[in-house]
Length: 309
Image (tube, rainbow, N blue to C red; front, side, top):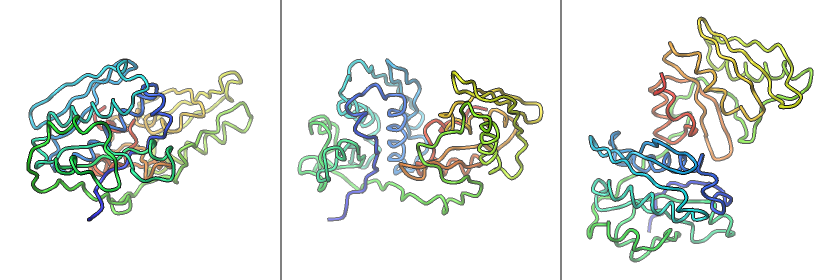
């Protein structure tokens, strides 16, 4: 029996124990992975858009061609109940889109055989399954939630299973203008030290200069504030200017800061995740960006950079 085609979502065991405290990043990542699954339909209008995600409420729009379904979920119903939340989100998606899946439906899975419990609860797998698979099981996986959560929606007969696009590498996607690879815990050299402004300049310019025609200039005239450990940086490019107060955790936000000065450019800075543990910055146009997004490389905060003008 061939191995089940699935998309893995590593989220760590902490979010399972403390949901919905981690809603701010977990929910966008879940929707991002679901959209990667929907890419099997090969229809760009079949997708999920996160409309609102505050501490109380998730609001998402599920697009089925010209039809838009808006669904809301209250986080208060899921205190320490991550698995129930995932099940309800996927039930909602299936309810609106299952008619597009050739007799299959989306299911959330956990690994049935893993080295330890932490690994099992830290990894979610998303796949297409048939009614028969629900009833008889999927080798190597256990279904998240009770089978009755899904069975009533699944058709009696399944046709050709939707094929999730094979993920191309960044090299195959012709990533040309890119930064070094950064560890996911990487932080900026911002602290109360006389050398810090120069070190920070070097760090920022290293990312800025992945654009071979970079015109953004930096003005760093003062050391970090000894109390907040934040450093004032002025970014200038032509008629645009923005002032930021950076702390060490701003690394993933650099591209968004730079993009504020690129309002008249067709290219943007974008943060990519080549794997679960590392980041890389890219400088790309919208066509390249859409490919990075299709293959699930775009860091969740950058998913809409070309929609922001």
